[in-house]
Image 1 (cartoon, rainbow, N blue to C red):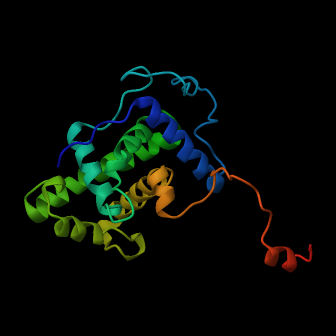
Image 2: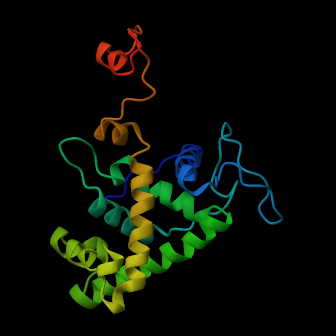
Image 3: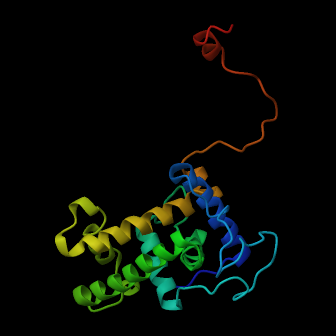
Length: 209
């Protein structure tokens, strides 16, 4: 698999903050408003240009990045409506997410890195190759065993928990891109040339005509 062009760190961090803000509607917590604490300082300034090492080191090795990209594309492959997750740089989002020094991200880092290690070992055990080198059917067969935690066999429970977390990160990133929002036909944040008011049937229903 050819490695995709990497996203700038500023864009990746802005993406992490945007995705976390949407997650916070469900959890009531936000990466963007995390308080300063001894050990990692304040949140990054999003208008700055950052180079590797300016904020925090990234976590994924080149091989792990390729594995993440391959798994992202099993979850969200390219189709006739949108590009694949890796084509939209979702692996860069995941790398930035698990590298951030906040408590939630640190917890996710261990789960994601352990999950990647399990994926490689399972690929080698079943097919004598790394996950990236597997064909699509082989990748799917492994993922089918871990895609639902409640249905996973006893030996696959932890891997299924990893897959659930990874799938959530992948989809949170993908569907906060312009292409992802277009894919689900989200129409918010689009300026109108003119405002014609609510449809007559809505006004009639509300008895506001």
